[in-house]
Image 1 (tube, helix red, strand yellow):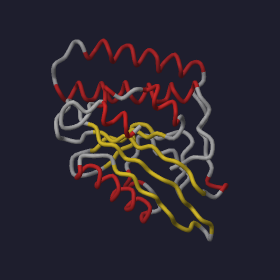
Image 2 (cartoon, rainbow, N blue to C red):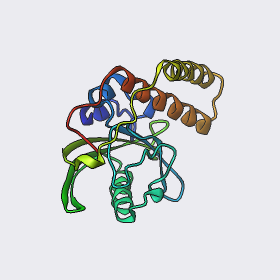
Image 3 (spheres, helix red, strand yellow):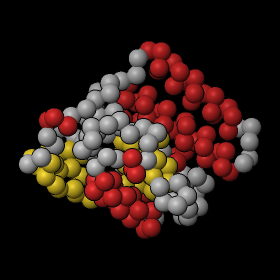
Image 4 (cartoon, rainbow, N blue to C red):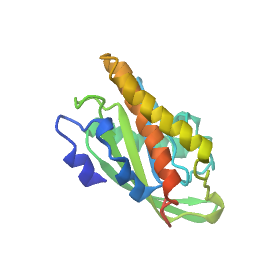
Length: 198
């Protein structure tokens, strides 16, 4: 995924709409899409279906400030902030103890812009599990047929709407909706990548 980030970087940063959903399929169930909000908040537009966190929650639609485990949330903020400040991918190995058990994984955080400019608007975060306590395992499951149809309709309608506006903020929002739906659809087609996480 890091190579893909570099290959799609024609401006200061790659654009989110250049992210290849098929590549995300290699890490199905392990990729988050995060919106970098004004003031430095990070909101999960899509929280990967099979990743863990100490709270055991699906964080889709929530911000990192909503983690009940505030130390974990602060660590995530620090790592995401590093990728935003540097404007390049950042890979970190996380090693901790959770209720006396080892909790280890590798997180790759990649910054994306809306328009190829230098402003980081989105983060694509991929993770690889090393050792995570079994009781933290979670899998929200793939979309059912109805959700899959809704996601496909969402992708088609956002693509059409993008051609009807030139407003940069609207285009960025439409790109985010389309990419989040594409990532979720990829999860429908492939089981989660084995033995990976957070």
